Amino acid sequence: MIGELDATLGALYDAENRYGYDVQKLIDQGVHFFMVRVDGRPAGCGGVQIFPDDDPPYAELKRMYINPGFRGLGLAKKLLTMLEKTAADHNITFLRLETGIHQHEAIGLYKHWGFAERGPFGEYEGVEVNLYYEKTI
Image (cartoon, rainbow, N blue to C red; front, side, top):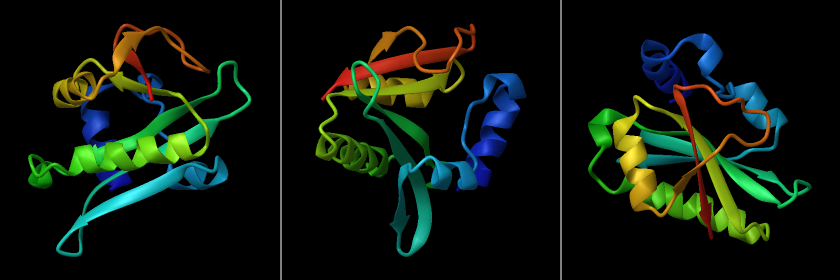
């Protein structure tokens, strides 16, 4: 799934504008990572990284992706529900994410899910092809 996501993003953005963790970094950073399956086949994935020591503490969505062949089945909403619950279970009230301007379906999903646009956060730098969102949970 991570390879599929990287291939998709690689066609849309230059390397310096892609911040996705590889599998080892997901593990090293302690990202709570989930995969959704349909009939046993991988259909999507996503994670949430907790930043408890920041002020305010927050969680960030990481590597969220639904394979195009499985879109429209409600999997993204199920995954977002799990990611939100994981953040809330860690006493987090702010959920943030970074995405790109060419990911129209994702942007629509995030806005529908209650995310509002905000400025860069954490280690991100403001670049015109990157967008940043936040939701209070």
